[in-house]
Each structure stands twice: as structure tokens, then as C-alpha cells.
Length: 231
Length: 367
Image (cartoon, rainbow over all chains, first blue to last red; front, side, top):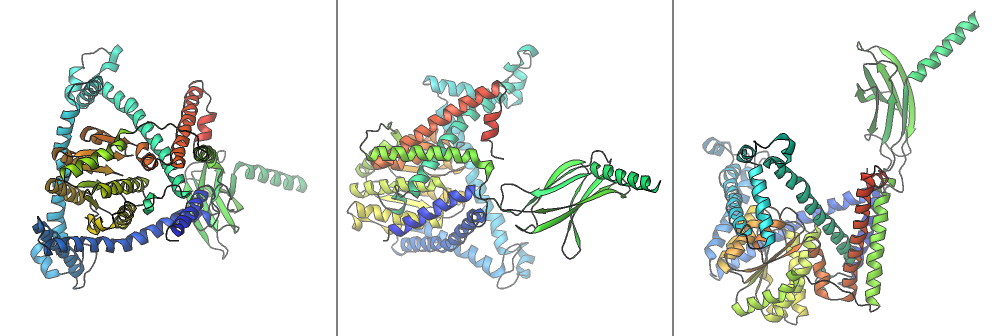
């Protein structure tokens, strides 16, 4: 029963959503949007589960002094401070339990939550994102090492695209006569990005689309049950 | 003389009316909540066309102002199915004087089938029929060949390595919620991986960034340990929530990778910019890495930084492939047939477009 009821619900909802794609008549036409709203409501409640998990895991780490438990203290303090400042003095457009905290604004320049958001959170986020530049460099170095025919082709294509997107690329091939202007580096780069790259991406997307249809059918028909913990 | 004048007046009125063409009709393929208004005032020489809706209480509501003498407008506000709606079109000159006007009535109707999606329906039926046919073929005992997917074959290798090294296995089911098919596919693979980890007594770490994924992943891992006959080895805190924030999650997972040094990392699901940050950190820590996503822009990053990559459809095929059950494998074969059909249609479409026949493109386009 524990397994069958979710399977029946999945089947009924899946079939209904497929029908609603082709039937605009009420009530089918509004079902898809309505189910999305249900999902948002359920995920809103589920946030509480996430927070409980976060507190439980970190409190246990601190309690049993597990390795690196100090990080858990910082995590919990950060969570409590952000939730607390948000609840007490509100955010930019919302008033908190204690009002807007005008005296604090006079000192800090903004509400405590917004101050922390702008001066701590955003900088930390930007720091993580900027790591990507260094990781791209190290990954590109490994990818472009000429070992096989494929990596040679990748190397050549990458050089053409990179040079084609710089003023140096344009300068290097500016002398090429108009009759064979397709050899200009910016045009070559544009060609590579526009045709082979797009074709490859679309092939992947078509395959993925078919895969999604296949997986959905397996789930709707109850053949695929591992997402429910079954075989 | 009087009769002649009346005739002349009526004749000119008819001519005048013919110059202003205004129609209102049900907007097709919808739930009866829109009216399609069309006008042609090319012969009048109007500067502006004003369309108003005539309400039952005698009020008028401005619907649309247009400087185009020929055009159409779909009105979707305030239209009820089966309720007649009256509209007036006024053709105005530059000073705002009414040159001509016409009133029409239309009733919106809800349709039971969206004819614009007939090509989609045909394709869906063909694909579904192919998948169902192969599922039944497989059930009847027909031998099906499915090519090897190296990334999925690596699961045993990864779990074995983790067991030998005494280090954990890290699994990330993407950064999107349960409404994304990639996340569900990731969780399906997690089920198989957790079972294998339970059998080998390898430690599993599953940080997630969505609360709904947390509860599902917990259930999946718990059931996998039960299936493996090792419910005692299940650690409820092995699956835990970090944060919904994209880069906060990356920072958390990177920290886990650096501190725990997992023997194997699995990144299977939907990923965005965090893909390379995760994969490169895993590479630096010396983990054996398997990634899979259907995000075309993130695949190159995974290909470069991971040992095995499941590309697009391979991620969705993973669960069926790992189950080795004939009816699940049959569905994969059906997908392959669907792919072959799409290939034929694409090639035919390219050929027809080259020779100037646009029928197939028009048929397949969803308006």
C-alpha cells in the first residue's frame, strides 16, 4: 500500500498533465499551472525540513566535538544572526517585529539584514563565483594539451575562437583580401560558434528530450520506481 | 427624384461600410478566454483605429489603439466562454474625427483539442508506441542489445575504490528541485549507488541544496540500505541539507571535498556555473569522478574535469541501464527507435527546405 498509492497518484497526475497539454478546455487547461502552484506551496513547507536538518547535523557535530566542529558553530551563528536580524528589523521592503530600526539605520546606513547581505553575503558569493575564472584556466590547460587527434582539434578550435573574439585576432587577419574574407579570425570564430557548436548542443538537447520522455513514461507507467526507494 | 436620392444614400452607405472591415471571432485553440479581433481600414485613410468593448451596462472600455490600418489583436482580458461580447471599431482622422465605425459581436468558445499541437501529439504517440512496443518485446524474452555506458560501469569501480581506501563517496543530485527530471534521474542512480555502498560498507555523503530533494534522497538511501540487508548501517545524517544558495552550496561541498577527501565523487543532475568549481575541486583532491547532466553548456566542464561523463540522454538512461531489468531496458530501445525516426524527419526536413517545400517545417512548428 505504501508503494502503490504514490504509484497510482503518479500515474493519474502524469496522464492528466499530458492530456492537459493538448486540451485547452476547462478544467484541463488550468491544471498544469495549478499543479505548479501546489508544488511551490509544498516546497515552501519543505524549507522547514531543510532548516531542521541543518540545525540537527551541525548541533550533533558540536555536541560530539566531531572533526572540524568549529565550522558548525560559525554556520549556526550565521543562520541565527541572519534569521534574527531579518525577523527583528525586517528587510529593505519589509518591516520587522521591532519596526524598521531607525536608530540602527542611522549608525549602519541600512537595516542590519541588508547591511550583512550587501557587505558580507554578496562578497562571499562573488568570491566563490570568481574562483571559476581560475578553475577554467586550469581545466582549459588540461583539455588543450595536444595528445590525441580529438584534443588537437579542440586546441585548434579553442585558439581560433579565443583569438577571433579579441582585437588581436581581427588585427592578425585584417590583411586577408575581401574575396576570401571567410578566413578572417572573427568570422571563423563566429562560424565555429554558430554552426558546429550549435549543432552539437542541439543534438545533445534532442537526445536529452527523448531521454526525458522515456524516463517520464517509465515513471508514469510505474516501471521506474527507484525514485521512491524501490528497485 | 426622392427615390433616387434615397437610393444614392443607401448605395454610398453600403460602399462606405464595405471600406471598413472589422470582425471579431473566437480565438482558436484556447480555453474560451480570448477573442480575435481583425480589421482592415486601408481604403479609409484613417490615422488611428480605436477598438472599444461595449459593456452590458452601456459603458465602453478601451481595448486597443492602433495606427496600423490592417491588423489583428487578441483580447484576453475580461472574456468569458459562451458569453457574447460586443466591440466597436472607430476609424479616426488626425484631428480625432470619426471617419467610420462598425460594431460586431463574438462569442468565445473553449476547444477540446489544440490543433496547433497536432504534430507534437503525433510524435508523442509514435514515441510512446515505440517505447511500449519494446517494453513488451523485452518482457516476452526478446534479447536486446544496449551499448555499454562507461560512466555507469564505473559505479562498482568507484565504490570498490572507496572501500579499499576507507574514504567516503560523495553524491550530489544537482542543484535544482524535484520538478526537474535530471534531479529525479540523479536520485534513481543514488538508489543503486547507495545499495552498492551498503553492500561494500562504504560511507556515503549526500549534501543537497533543496529541502524537497532532502526528504526524497533520505528515503531513497534508507530503502537502498534495507534492500541491501544492512538497515543497521544506514546513517540518517548521511543525507543533509546545506543551503538553497548556489554558491553557498558550492562553498559547502568544496569544504567537504577538501576535508573529507572522498574516494569517489558523483555529480549527477542539473548544474549551472557551479559545475566546474565542484569538479575541479574534486579533481584536485584526487577523487575518481563521474558526472552527468543534460545542461549542454556545463558538459564541457565535466568532460574536462571528470573521469566519466554521462552526456544528456545517458543520465536519463542510467536507472534503466543499472537495473538490468528487461522491461526497463526495452524502454531504452524504444527511445533509440524514436531517435532514428527523428533523424529521418530531420534529414527529410533539411532536404525539403533546400528544394523550397516548407510543408514539413510548417507542420512541425508549434504556433
